[in-house]
Image (cartoon, rainbow, N blue to C red; front, side):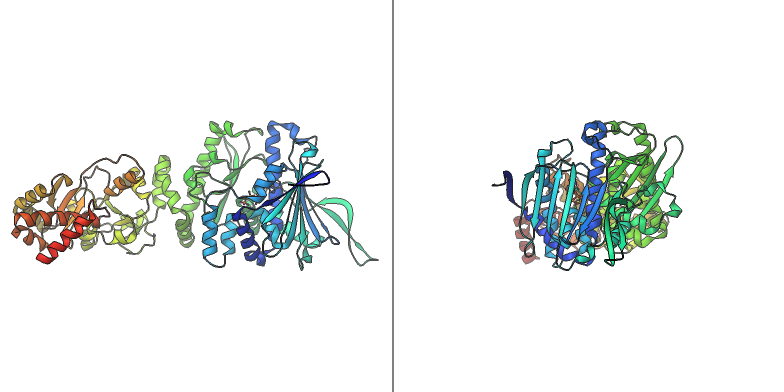
Length: 637
Ligand SMILES: Nc1ncnc2c1ncn2[C@@H]1O[C@H](COP(=O)(O)OP(=O)(O)OP(=O)(O)O)[C@@H](O)[C@H]1O
């Protein structure tokens, strides 16, 4: 630490991720450089929101000044643009933490992926939310002065970073006196960025990107000076943005671009949303909602902590960010605002826990989002396909989490199936119902580790031959939710790896052949059972095989083998259900088995079992013994 003029000045290093991000931001967002203003105004607005929220419990934080505002100014001589707010401000520690590190988990992996893809895609960086760092697109030196509301004037902080070359790796923090609460960000513009030293240009950008910001954004008045032949600034400030709550205006008066810009602000996204719904609910509980679906899943969608969920307003006053109580977890990709008419302004997170009003809003929001998805699926299938690719895995959680809407959610699911035979998930349960064969009572599915494993599974053979469609489920979560959806529109869901095939799907000849095989192969089945011992629960003749010699199945009511494996991987006690070995009665290996000596028979039996286990996605207990056995049998065959 160095001491200058009695103030403590400290040079610090950016976290490696920040350096990487700074570099990517400056290089990939340059073509869209004007967004820096939107990002910094957005931060200033968030800072005012935060102060208002904290001051609801601690009014002294206003320090006698409860009029929150954002000021924007420029200085042609110094070549600076300044964004200032009297919001919550930052302490020294907060400035170091928020402007020098990124605390979000998964950041490093995300940045590495971006880096590995060569030149980073601006949209990908955008969805990460670059916020403050976008200042460096147009500035090579950024100075931040701030003081947190409630701290003494002596607790001000000066944060400064000058970029030399691509990204200098350090910034400096100094303790300063700062009587004014809030934050001031001064951008020292790079060479060639003088276009932003203009009141006209800055006003244009504020109207374009920040018109909907609810706090007043002020700029100095300007007048034409005949003598100098240019616009000159006056002392007086004037409001530049409209500052009306977008969602409170009638729908027909809101332009599409306004919806889009508002989304970018609330969602911290750079891309336009995929779709949105704007609705006012009247009656016992009154509230307005403006809900958006993003185009792209954020990289931390599967992290535990949700970010930038819904914002809660009460009568147009901001109350809470990330109000997770307003959304079920399986809709955590939704962004936007809810404005409730009947909540108290000083509502806290704790109060939301068991508020009837919130319960009603949550149910209403859920209904609208599902309605929006249904509408997309019906009228804009391409958009729905995009939604499904990005968020389908999350929506599936709803089958487990939201019993009241289970059937509606089920109708929104999309699958790969033997019908299309492609990994694209395009088949709905209704499509499936429409293609069911006469006499087919159940919706068949198969769960597997991957699409390739599912597609070549021996369990599918007879279904394929009969043209009975099977849904191919390869997400981890598929194992869980299927257990929560026993039926859809009265048709039970059934795994092709469990129980017996629908009797109605078998012809009379097939049934007869099966009975005949049961009888004929009885001694062989008993011999196999004896040879396999504890490994299997039973050995029986199969109706589902046409190519493979054998497969493993479990009883209808038992958890699938794939689920048992998942549970064991998660360190849970998996139920020790033994599988049933099913034998293909028409396979030539039967003759071989029947002719084998006792010693060879035991080897063949084990090999059949091990093959079936592998095909089903299982792990061999003793792979080396399997290989030896196979080699031995190959030589004697
Ligand atoms: N004007 C400001 N007043 C107070 N704090 C600020 C201000 N600007 C930035 N910060 C702090 O710095 C943090 C980082 O800002 P930044 O814009 O980089 O990311 P963010 O807004 O948190 O989210 P995202 O990265 O998704 O945009 C903010 O979360 C906030 O805590």
